[in-house]
Amino acid sequence: MRILIMGGTWFLGRAVAEEALRRGWEVSTFNRGRSGPDVSGVQALHGDRTDPEDLSTLASYGPWDVVVDTSSSALPPRDVLAGARTLQPVAERYVYISTVNAYRGWPSEPLTEQSELLDGPPDADAEYGRLPEGWDGPDWYYGRQKAGAERAVLETFGEKRSVLLRPGVILGPGEYVGRLPWWLRRAERGGRILAPGKPGKSIQPVDVRDVAVFALEQGAASVGGAYNVVAPIGRETMGGFLEACLEVTGRRGKLSWVPDAFLLEAGVEQWTELPLWRTHAGVWNIDSQGAQAAGLVCRPLAETVEATWRWLREGGVPVAHSRAAEHGLDAARERHLLAAFDGWSASGVEGEVH
Image (tube, rainbow, N blue to C red; front, side, top):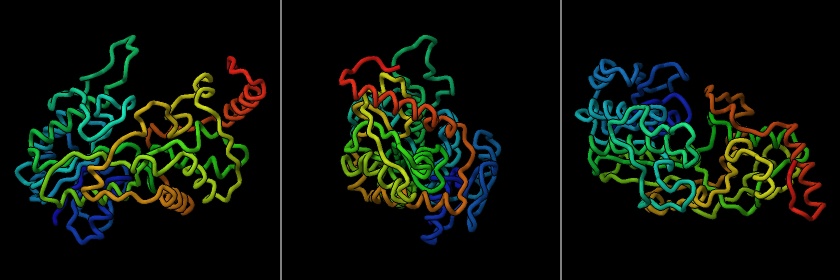
């Protein structure tokens, strides 16, 4: 198999490249050469995918059996469309890494692979879907952009030659957003740890290595499709996740579970201040039975936690990314919240949180 990876130097792109090489595939990667070193053993092609001349030069290195696009999260649909059109004559199939944000109902409603997608034209520019000033409704900008990019791939390669993968949260070695690394460092620090919500709350992160395997297997398949790439509903819990973080870091801390109602009243930022914590009904209620039937296998979350901790202990450094600064609760704020919660609990009255 000859494979072209758009990206290929960090996190998911790197995991795809390493897995493809392990299988004995011939691997080319295309990126700007700025975010990390190329994986040893690939044909490293450098250029800007928004530059028509660079895309044309890239196409001259084809043909490929499959393109796996891991690097378009910040690109508008029209750039994905231009790249797909350039590569279509020299590529048999296209695997596009999208997101569950492309669904109109995320994160408020339970989702299946048949759920309604957001609007988003395949030729939309980066301004499409931006929120007007004063807007207080759902923030659909990113989802509209990704839905449009999905349509760009489908319009160019057709349904039988297109594979659309919609992960939720991807964790594992090399993670650059900082969700799991923050919880691991917090567990390592020890002491009393603010644990959000209820320990039995279902969560559905997926390991980056499992996404890479599934992307390659779908790239080598003979049919197209769209799949939710998340762990099975109900298998993993927030409590199990945090216990795994404590276990691998030496059990220096103790979890103090604080209810959603208290955290919401206190103004704690969901999804960022306490990574993976979110109260919306659909955020961890995503049906992935279609992906599982097609071969998706998700390893236990505890294995992802252990592998990420090992990567950090061995000197692993994620690619610098602005989103990492958004994640994590300040230590002083954590202490204040826990003290306030103690008083709130002792009073027996759910009054105002100060």
